[in-house]
Image: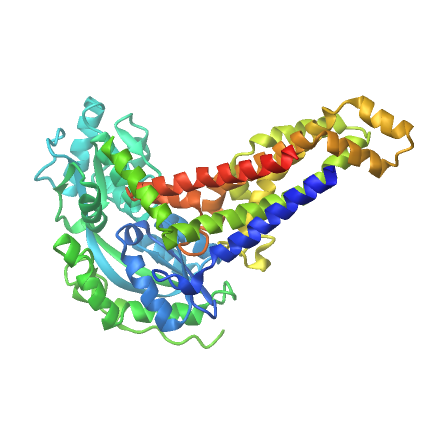
Length: 319
Length: 228
């Protein structure tokens, strides 16, 4: 009796898992999201803004079809994406923090870095702009936020990503250019809030709390349409706000299992005119303007040198 | 309020229409948690018996430790399993980080103490007279444990259900070691967390309802078995 019961439960659980795994992979019948047969899995870690705007949902099936691989996209800010890359847990990373990218390459973790898209950051906040930052430059805006936030933390709050992402790195850079010590800023009081979330979730949080936030314009537009944000863009168009996205392959000499051939193909595909065209129009229909700019059109100060995005990466011949 | 109502309506629609993406995510969640619960049960039933029926020094301490591990934080297990199975980790050679396999392993680690502890306490709660009678009637060690398990079946079953419940409802571990990859390691809970952060509350609510529905069906099913 007892054994029967236990066996029945185990059999039940086993049956459930079998049924569920059968139900879990109706790969062929699923119209929206077909799985590829040979099941070569190609893993990338991507910065959250490219994910939250839906760009990867758009690009993923195209590359899967082209390269006949199953692409696994892990949602991770630049900091954690670089960490996954250092550990060899992914085959390529998509990040946006030039300083740390250079360290990553110099340390031998990555090769074949190419820029493929750019956009701009902005500072958004309540329409009433209690800190009065409208018309300021980026550094002036942060300085005003700091003073107003210290003065009245209930009226003026700033939400930082606080997650070592590329956006967070840019924010720290602006703080230092404004003459602040970042550690001091983040410990200065209740007005400075560290969210520890991706770009989209941080925007939603800023919206709920009616606070200021620094975001890339693409995620801001996407969320503005989708979630009807009540915060508005206040400071834009400062050269320091330029935000360049890069793809980096994981170095197979450091991590022999990294799928360098697919990674190279992927990077070359990203800088190909096909994908550059897709990027230049992505979002136009929904948002009235494209969410990202193809890197090929980047011609302002701070833009990467042309070979950073025009030169196809060489085939890997072993090392 | 309209948002919640709207969400519920969409949720019901998604469920009734057997929306392929929702069904796939639900199926995957069920598969992963059922696998981990089965493995944990296969470990815990014999192990629980061994611990219960034997006397050894430190038994009390061992049980205390097991009970402490009931409250193991899912993110701590996630971090531990991640470091173990990450490519450069000691078990990186398996190459299973960011796959369902490593999620199952993580869940087994997470729920084993819970199942084991509850099985042991269910066995301890049985009337001592039952085992004494069995022994006095000449039962072997194995027969005695069969008798005790039969007495304790309600408690044991509750332990298994609790383990499954913790496995299918956890999110921190799945997010960390599975990576929440669409079409591969996205489960109900990680999808809810993602959809909520995307502001897509309808899908999140639908998935939440499905999670509760699955729990309900499984509980009814197991109760049926229990009452026989």
